[in-house]
Image 1: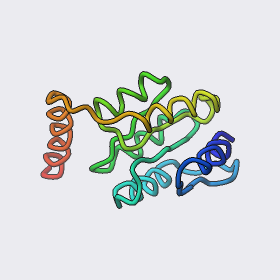
Image 2: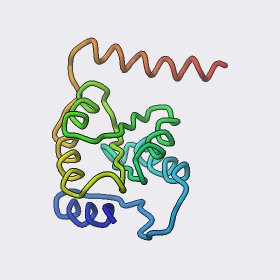
Image 3: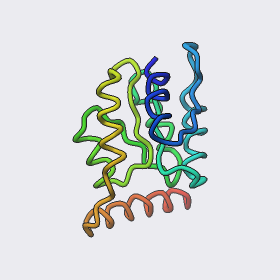
Length: 138
């Protein structure tokens, strides 16, 4: 269970709030996506780490919430760009597709990376926020 290992590793370095199932039983990722998105939107935490089988389902579930930018990450470069260019606030990993060493590597990269001050990235992120607002009008 990758989540158990990550929790143990990061409890030594950071304050964490674990919403994990702590079980091998299957859970519905839309429910878990809602839970982690609510926590991030509450501003109690700087970012979230979400894990499902491949990371795809949980990233889709989280991205349904206005203000959430959940990035499915499979490399250090993706972790860097998800934060630097897209200001992601949830990093998504595949529990069946990501080894613990890669998970720690990409999470550490994500934690260290700051959002870019380049205007083009700010403009693109504002466009994403505006597209959510226009969908609310439909």
